Each structure stands twice: as structure tokens, then as C-alpha cells.
Image (tube, rainbow, N blue to C red; front, side):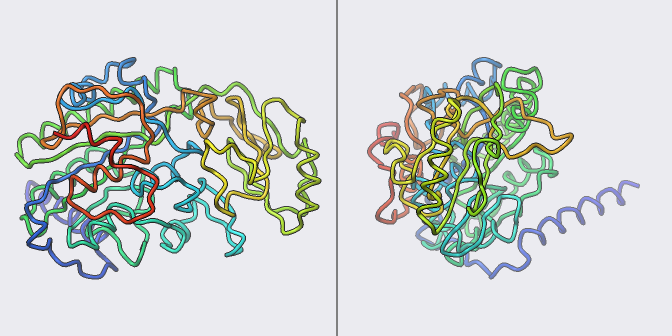
Length: 413
């Protein structure tokens, strides 16, 4: 029986390995000049609001910050949704500049729609602009790995991480942690220097039950326990690893909903609905003008903008994918078209303007040999993480990014 269990475990690991590597071109080992560079682990806790750690006594996360750097909050880019902000963190570009402008959108040039539920789109690298950190590392002779991160399983610039998984929410958190430890145990030529790791539990419970629910508090503590196990195993390895724990956005309690289809005639325009914004596209300017006139001022819980008139502070007008017209929720309401029978409304939501709803702010905790200890910094925008990590890894950053190294340089030893 014991041998049977061992063989089953070996087969499971083999299938996982094949799932990572099948279909990938061979990656060269770390270049000799890269093998003694630092190691960075970037962890995302999806939907982890800026105040959850203190509120719910996330002791392992707080201890990481006490031994390193804690930001009072991390300011997400607009819209405060999952795909745009994860990709902003690893490219240093606002969503309008890297092209993933929302979780779903229409591309007038391609005449095609991007949806996070459509793997054919999410794994197609031609949708993704910029140079994410794993591509930057691989291009400069340094291996990278990803246990989930939006874009990490796409062939961006014909490059994927040496090791990666296609997204599967059913893979338990403990298995994700174990794989990271296995990667860090590899010999230096094979060991990835940049690793991403992703957990969705807190976001899921926040949507389903609301940010102040017992279920969300339990999820905070559960993921903190997983992090505690990871931190302990990393310490035992002795690998000089800088650990960053961030979130893509926070969460607000939903107070109501708005049915956009009841406010205007949407015939003759392409529409991509997101829960906190609606994008409208048309090649006919007169049709957009009529729709603007119908929607403007109809409901105090939304504001309608032509793309060129979106407030400059949102950095959200330089891309046709954003739409010719955008309706934005200004209160914590859910936007939708005519409801389907039996459809349940989420009790928590994100995607709103941080200036209107501070609950959208996320977290930043970091510690490691390249970072100062016992430091608390003011809140900052998530575009600035990219140049900092690239600097730690000794990578040359492409020109034209929005993030600035000088913002976070003071946290380095």
C-alpha cells in the first residue's frame, strides 16, 4: 500500500510537470552572469483590501512587513479590476498603455472581444502589450516561473516563463506553495530568479459574502496561514529571496444595482458590460452623441464620459479599447443589463475610482536581503513596483514605462 501511494504521488507530480512544460520551446539555463543575481517572489492576494491584515490579525503577513517594508496602502490603477491591475504590476504601465483595459472589452481594430473567461484570448500574446517581468527576465538570460498570474500563460513577445501553469482554481493553495519551494530547490542553472504566486480566496469570499462578512475574515486568516507555511519553508532553504506580497485592488460592500438597458436605447452600438463600468463602441459619431444624451444625468449613481473627456487623473483615455463612450459607477453599485431569473447579486465589488472609494486600495508588504527592515512608507501607485523589482534582479528596463524607480528606491538597503 505504501509503494502504491508513493507511485501515485510520483505520477501526480509527473503529470503536473508535463502540464507545465508540454508545448513549450526549450528554455536555456540561467546565463552564467545571471546565476548569482538575487531571487524575487511576487505574491498576489486577489481582493485583499488595505485594512484586512490589521483588522483580521493576519499575523504572518504583518510579521513580514515588520521585518521589512509595509506601505499604508497600494493604490491600484483604474479600473480597479483583476486583469488590468495584475498586468500593470508586472509591466509598470497603466492599463490604457499595456492594452488590458478591463476584464472584458472590445477591440475595434481587431473586431474582436477580450474576456477573461475566454482562454483563446487570454493565452494569445498579441492582446498583451508591454514587457512583463517574466518576459524581461527570459529575454536577458534569466529563468522565470509563474504559479498563476494574468498573462503568464500567454505567448507575449513569443515568450513564456520557463515554468508556468495554466490557470486552474481547483489546484489547492498548499500545492502552489509546495511547487514554489520545489522551484527554489533547483540547481542554480535551472532555478528561476523571478517567481509569481497567486491566491484568489479572499476576493472570492469578498464578492460572495461582502468585505465585512465572517467568510471573508476567515479567508484572510486561512491565506495568512498558508503564507506562514511558505515563509517558514523559505527560511529553512536559506535562499536569498526578496518576498513581495501585494493585491490588485480592495473591495466595497454593494449598496444596489443599475440596469443600464432601462436608461437608454443600446441598439446599434457594441457594448461590453463590466460590473462597474459599461463601454460603448460605434463608428457612427452621431449614434454615440445620441447615447450620451440619453445616459447623461439619467441616474446619479453613474457618470457618462466620452473617452477624450475621462478625468486625466485616471490615465484612461489613450486606447480605443476603452470605448467611445464609458458609463462609470460613482457609488458601490453593480451595473448590468436586464437580469436573468435566478441571478444572484454580489455583496462585494471592486472596479471603482479610488478617489471616490478608498476601499479600492490594496496592500504592499515586502522583506528580504535587498530591502530595509522595519520601514513603513506612504501609499503609492502600483505602477512603481515594476522598475523596483527589475532593479533588484539586475534587469534592464524598457523605455517608456509609466512607473519610476525613484519612488521606491528609498526602501532598498
